[in-house]
Amino acid sequence: MKRWITLLLLAMLTGCATAPKNTLTQISTIDALLAGAYDGQMSIGQLLRYGDFGIGTFDALDGEMIVLEDQVYQARADGTVQRMPANATTPFASVVTFRPDRTPGLTSVLTKKTFENAVDEYAPNQNLFIAVRFDGYFTSMKVRSVPKQDQPYAPLAEVAKEQSVFEYIGVSGTVLGFRCPAFVKGVNVPGYHLHFISDDKTRGGHILDFTTVGGNLQLDACNRFYMMLPDEHRFAALDLAKDRSIELEKVEK
Ligand SMILES: [Zn+2]
View 1 (cartoon, rainbow, N blue to C red):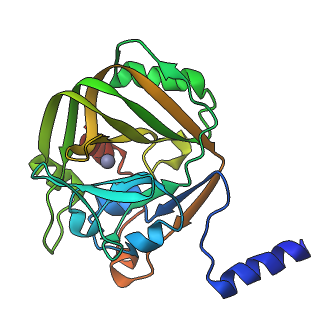
View 2 (spheres, rainbow, N blue to C red):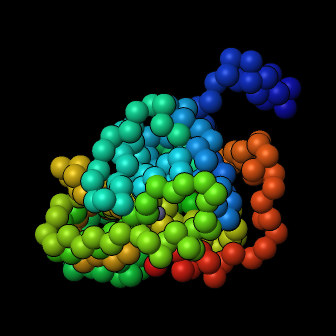
């Protein structure tokens, strides 16, 4: 115990922010995002100290975030994808240091739903966080992105009505994201939350549906959860007591 406290103090003094193994690190909460908390709270440079893999969004809700192999990409509502600099910021993101425990190949034709069922078979413990990566060929890939917002921010359920939807036919790329336990309701997205980026890094977004003919699946189970909340007046003023699960369901589709 004493040693642990010493280590913790050392980490605090040296400003060491590297998360321990199998830790999902999260910035803010999904309900804060649903309520319109879109101001960037952490720089991308800092976020990458907590993981090299994950998803989220950017300051002012400017597009969908994809963190893959230590690079951060922005899939914008105009359909473009770009790499983001270290000084860009995020209001909501989840990352892990991706070290897969299981790497099964998937060879059958799968839709988003049957893909999720297949992942459930490989990762039956629904009470852990599962980081999911799937590299494959998609006969169709339907994604969305949200447009950058201006103050005063509208709630996410309103913004989602103006989302751009893109359907790509015949594209190779990576599906990545998380399956979160049901008990994270209000904090993160229970169940699957998946983003996509094409191999050539020109197309991407938040996945609505897809069909794949197969590829390589990698799963990393995480049993540690680290959350950082914004310490500022707008976050303090949010009503986070309310149940926003219906709003979340609308936004996810
Ligand atoms: Zn998303």
